[in-house]
Image (cartoon, each protein chain N blue to C red):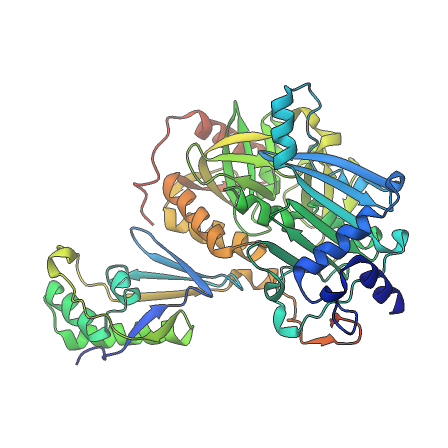
Length: 142
Length: 382
């Protein structure tokens, strides 16, 4: 199957995302690192976080773009792999519902899945985690 | 150590004190510090009532009546006569913060039964916070605080008020304000706000981009000033912004200098890349406003060019610039803050503004933007 059979859920414990017309921006709520996903990722995003399996998404998008599912599946797998590496996605069981091709409408030309990572905020969070608490003093050791 | 145990044992019922005399839950920490406050000498206090938009806060500093300047950065509530029912409502909604100076009050540091896994990277201690309470560990001061949202009260214990750093005095108790604001439908946003005629622009971006420069240049041009770093925002129409602090902070090494601040009294944030902190309630009181309605977002950046250029940018670019620094500094629900910034950037048009060496040139552009017909957020492409 193109794109693999895995399905994933968005890691809401650590991240938030906002969907815009031209890109998806995901934000790490702990350290402020943010990610921008563009191109066909904007089309695929609701289905990825909606726990559709990669193969279902790849087949639906490929049909709509009129291209080979294998090629699109490889791109999708690579994109999803990066999201998993960053822990933006966590493994989950796939939903049974399919993807309504009509709902996808007519898509612009296939643009691939773009992935950007930005760590501009690192300077703002320079604190070390608390590693220890002195049980006698009832106070963290900093 | 013995002092701690005596203080706790006398302030809490026996069944709420662990065998080792330590406090085991946020509610017990509230009870302990409330007892400390109730038994304090009321004559040795400094008090202040702050009005931060719709948020009214009554702050009392215990044991340091001689140090009321820690409240200087907070806008004062007006003293105009008001009908009794308004006063009653204000009193009911008022949030009370009691600050205990441990050294001056001879109140030892409470001993808490917390574990390393309770802490996060910020002041908020997730393992000691729930729906009704938020506990804060004040790393810089080696102090703690606990907010009891149900009773509208918070208690702050500091080893001494002197441990409060200059940057915290410029934005005192912002971490509590973050939590209170979200519970009242508002969000603290990392941004500057300036305006004219009650309409303003929200200037967003990480430190060093020019927020303070534009805000101070706006004062020189006779515009209204609401914030240079943090403000409260209502993320629903008409998108009001409210003033949180009277202060402005300017990087000591800032390349673009706003001339009118030269020679003014200020304090210095003593660290590398530090800032000069000005109290505008003293230096420019007539320009300070409590509320402006936001009509647009601005993303500033310095330019070596001679002209100030302003150009439309997409909602997503505005979100990228506004959300991360707001979220990283948020001491409440970061997800809520991100969602509110998302709503704001989608609803309002955003512009990149390039600030030349004479920042006054950018102010003319901003004025034009404020008074021009309003476009919607849509229509810009990246």
